[in-house]
Length: 361
Ligand SMILES: [Zn+2]
Image (cartoon, rainbow, N blue to C red; front, side, top):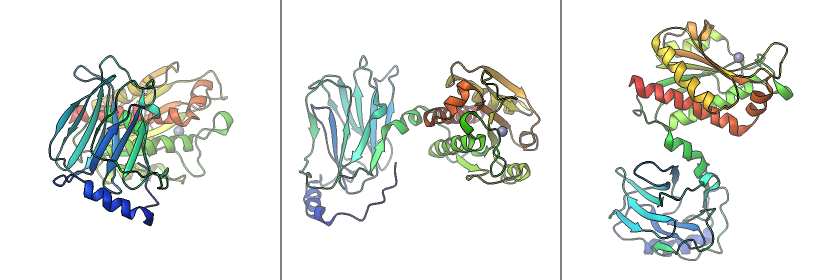
């Protein structure tokens, strides 16, 4: 979720606000006050002021159809299920854990939805809107609970939104015990050492820093403690990278790099992961390699290998060095220049790490 910078709010809505407050169900401490799915395909929510929402999507499995859900702070008093219509199977209001309200919208099992562009937009202190795109007009009838008061004269809060897309993959990643594991992520190179230079001046140091930051964020959201050896484009020797992990007793160390071929051959592409020793290092390398090759179709799988790079040799814990592609290669280089691909690679690395942590418990 974006940090909301404009919380110094609009005096003009204070009146409306009191009105809203009076409408709240008396017993409920849930931040969710009212909801509606309109026949024009718009989900509307009314919440307590400045509520912090989180939205997730999960693809259908054996027991559920495609579904998305929104979490609100506070508990609702009576969990319930409301029958849907059209492509919407049902709407559930529940408390998945103490102090949380969850609004789940589940679709029919034969209805596949594509929520990648869906965005829950805060339109004022209390009201939210999300267009459920891709449904024909009047695909379903309006379903709602609670009251909405008009807020048409309120300024739009386009700065405040929850991007469902960012949480799609997150919800589908393996869960590990929270606050149990500690991972050091090492973005290769930095400062005057820019690493390899690829197509169009693409620098390894920038690519791997970007990917490392995304990996770090994902792991943190999954309850893993993470430290990065560098978070900026700074010069950092190999020794302090290693001692950071050794001195703080990290569970694993993951160094992220991109490759370059001699002579910058455009036809050389591929991904590989190195480990130094031990079955754990090997397992970690396998898990990561499997995931990164999945999101890089067409690029050769160069496999996992033993390597004696300083950072993986001198670290005391299972350690790997991941090469996420050749920035000098036409296929890899073009991809690694794109934010979307970097994000995919980062999710892949995070998934590999989480699968490993899940396995070793
Ligand atoms: Zn490198």
